[in-house]
Length: 66
Image (cartoon, rainbow, N blue to C red):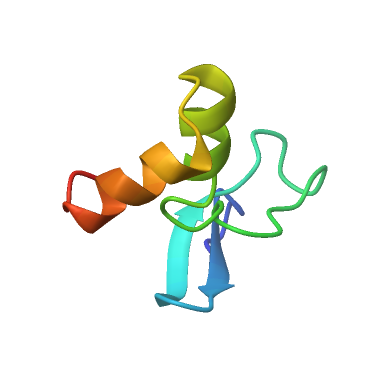
C-alpha cells in the first residue's frame, strides 16, 4: 500500500499479488477481486445475446473458433 493509500495489493488466485489503483475515496470501499475469469460469461453471451444453441457453441469450440 502506498503512503496516500491510492494503491492496493490484491491476491489473485491465478496471477498472485497484483497492485492496482484503490477506490477513488481511500478507505471508503474495497476491492474484493480483480474480475471474473476470462471466458466466464461466454455461454451467456453466445447463447442469450447471439442466440447460439449449446450444440452450435460446442461445434465452434470443437473447430477452435471459440
